[in-house]
Picture 1 (cartoon, rainbow, N blue to C red):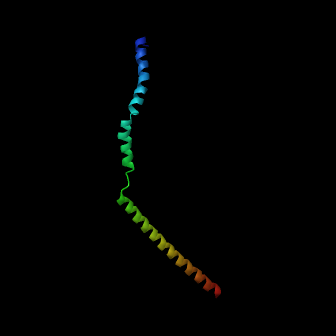
Picture 2: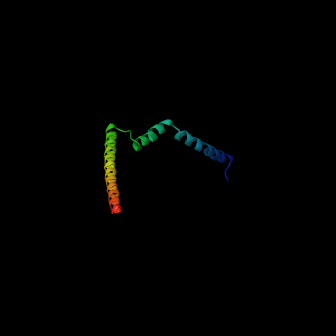
Amino acid sequence: MGTWKLEVVKMSIYVMFPVTMFYYFNQTDLFETYVSKKVKEMYPPESKMHRQELESLRQRMRIKYEEKLKHLETEERELIASAKKSASR
């Protein structure tokens, strides 16, 4: 056990430490420099070139999908036609 002076110093440290941390980490300048910078790194703003690349990819995928659908439809028609022929015999 210490004297009353030591207890006063310990109590002031217990009280001032959280207050100091709240003050330091609640600064808007720190938020702007660190968090905003990190957000811009993780989610960069879209450029027109990037958007065009995505649009061309979407078009190519749509064309492939439509070709695949047409191919499946023709196969289905052929199967139905062959089933009708075999049923009519």
